[in-house]
Amino acid sequence: MAIKETRFKTDGNSEVISEKNLYVGRVISVAHFRALRNHSDTLDYTDFCETNVTEALVYNGRRANGDVWYACKLVKSGEEIPLEYRFSKIDCTNLFVWRGSPKYEPEADAFLIPNQELLDDYAAWLKFKDEEVLAHDKEIEAQFAADRENARKRQASKKRVKKAPKIGTKVCVTEGPHKGRTGTVAWVSPRGISLVKNDAQWKDRQADGVWVGPAWLKTR
Image 1 (tube, rainbow, N blue to C red):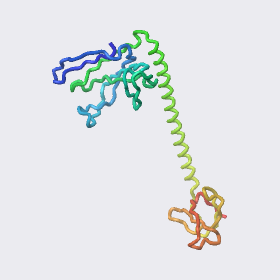
Image 2: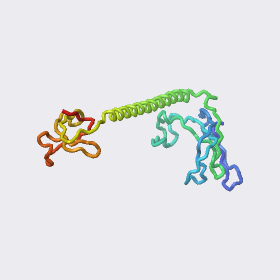
Image 3: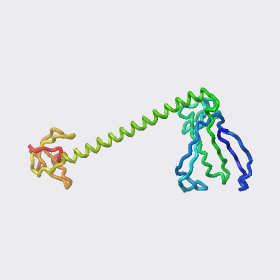
Image 4: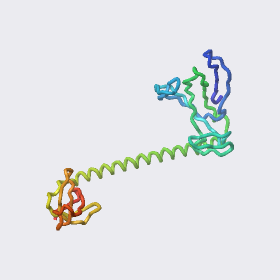
């Protein structure tokens, strides 16, 4: 029977006003599981509770029957539906039947009658979803690798840190943007960063200099 939709009057007497079957021959599977759902009766605030959820996986077909939005993509009537949107999940948990929402009763029926188009698309869609999961896993793995490398660099940087040379010490810059520069330490900041000026001008307060961390300095 696919997904049976039943609508009731909203005056609380449970009188049925219409019944129809949706996605006939296109319900792939029906899943039952526990998950958090918003039980707020107006949905203008959150009241999440653990709920017995029912979800139906359905086939939308290859071409749109009327204009329809899939995620943020508009597919116009008669246009081909992208593979990733040819199957979708329908929530049949029936949280708000009491306030006028229709009641959905799903039953898998897609494989009762042979449909080669559905079978071909389902196989292709499953492959697409597997590749999507693999791509996501690779992104996470790459992020973990980058995090490990950054942690290694931070640790290596900590190991390089040493006490700043005293004022008047002749030094050579071994790393960084000023690598290869020589001079004399004219000042050391409270954070241990040295102001290096030319040997002949290191006592001249007007002379230009460069600020260099102790890990990038070597005495001469």
